[in-house]
Length: 458
Image (cartoon, rainbow, N blue to C red; front, side, top):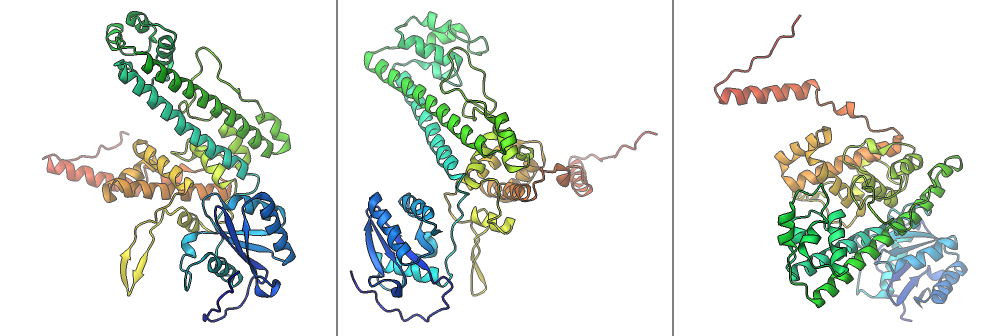
């Protein structure tokens, strides 16, 4: 084991004497403890489970209370879970904060640098939801991946139909709907008569039978039918998996409710889709198949559906990433900074170099941006704010500003346990009314008219 080099940096006051640092890799993990705790303060361990348990046992022998490690892909998760089981706190660090290692960069120096920074209190741990929320977070992220896979299978269905020159998916908005499913299943069953296939249309479909008949006249070759069959069966399989994941998420979330209320929300979710016509889910086919609003109202202690733009799928995604409490963030500004939804001011010599927001892969920020983009045409105070920002800043900046506003509203609702109050953003406030009247008068004057306000009748 190479001998650690002495550092010429000035020594700081040790705030965490029982701190260790770990450099995480896919095959090796380098761990550093205070030099006085072991004859070999830096050791290398493999990533097999027995080797990770040996690592944890060695840290316990060295009387380590907390370990700092970088959030490297998913390699840190097995070690972090074993450390928490042993009662050792985990300080998950953003690699961006510790990338400047003095001297040559090696795995040994990385873990020593993490141990030193953590011991003197210069590292900030990343946010992690409570332990009971993490299983739901893992399952919901898996569900998101399954939803993306289902869309890929639908694209393969479209490709197979295009190769057969069957243009039905250009006349049907959703090939997985009632009409599209009936036609695809009939084609896979061996039906080739375009008139019969067109007769399977749902009465709500706008395309008429003659147009459908022409679109369903194709070149049905065996290789394209084979691709169509595999894509359709893959889609059905993925949708069945999504339903199973939702049932497990529902079970775990219902178990977190108070005992007196758990039985009311523990209704089972169907493990497989029922044959025949299915009731359309509110919010689309990708909306959760269990009562999300009721569950979140009981878990959070507040009705978050009152916030404009936050639908049931969005709220479920937010809760699975955050939990019911945001006590880890001292203020809404800290929460917005963690989401990278605020300006990242860079000033040097009194000159403002940049104010652009940081690039981030934060799933909460992504969900809020999607919600902000969807609320742009809504007739409420958030929609008006989005349109006002879009006229002033442009489309991309308006989405960021609206997502920031939604984040602050979400923070206030979760911390105060009070529902969203729309009266605080009254559209008919005197200030907004005077601005609207000034714009109307200016527009009327430019057109050669005079705006006259009607007097209320007595």
